[in-house]
Image 1 (spheres, rainbow, N blue to C red):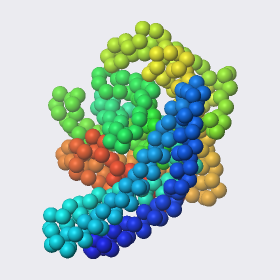
Image 2 (cartoon, rainbow, N blue to C red; image 1 turned 90 degrees about the vertical axis):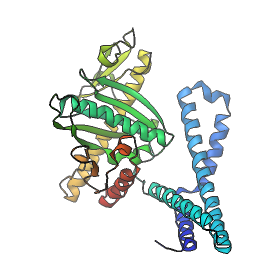
Image 3 (cartoon, helix red, strand yellow; image 1 turned 45 degrees about the vertical axis):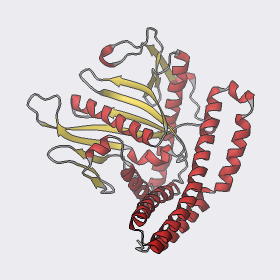
Image 4 (cartoon, rainbow, N blue to C red; image 1 turned 180 degrees about the horizontal axis):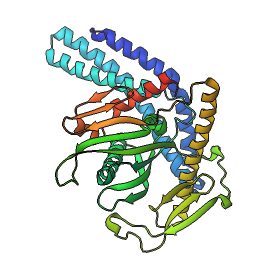
Length: 367
């Protein structure tokens, strides 16, 4: 890392240029202009789902273009700040410039990470399912905690989320949950979170305050799009309807509007209870099922390739991270070896360092 601010700024300008060569701001601007024309057409709003997709994509492009423009401007301003500090021997201005330079370095590194997301589905939104594993009530509580980590992470980044289904445990926490993070590249960004997450802490549900190890499984899938062509014949599914419920069995809907779909050939079961309408819940559940079948198809294709390569079909979706709150404080990723003692920040959704290291690791491993 250069110690001279002018040299570092020059390096950051070069890095930003290489990032833009991949992101292609001119193409982004053309797409944004096309979407602006579509959004101005009143007929678009006859299809609410399509209209929301257009406005969400346009909002993303406008934000990314504004971000690139801001980074260029801030790099220029920071260079001027150091020049003034040197000419005036102004130490406070120099310290301000160093803080801004550190912030710019971090933001450009994050953008550089984006250029590594080149997988077939990396640009998709993410569908996340979390299921409690071994550990009883502690595992259910941990599953709820993991959901909060991802929802807080999305909130910190300004991403929209929607919880499709939650199955509450009897004593505390949740047995399972499914939700989506509606942001471009959410799948590519988060797919390294797929796997088993291990929590070690003093049990809140043990009268003797003993240490408890519990597990939760995170499943990250790309959201399906119309181009995916996942056909599901009606005779291959069973649809059950039931009454939505909240924690402790408290009813949240007085009609049987929640929907559970079982895919008979694979045994995959999905459900949705977040909408008032049974029709809407069925449509959402079908979309979740399509995502799971799309991922299953992708995994089967990858397994065939692995067999041809002779690598034994190695898998990375096992235990991936440990969260230890007792007898010491540490969160450590078992693949990248990134770790932190600031467990409170991680539990509040500050997981970018882990995610960025995962993206680099996945790229390095060819996954």
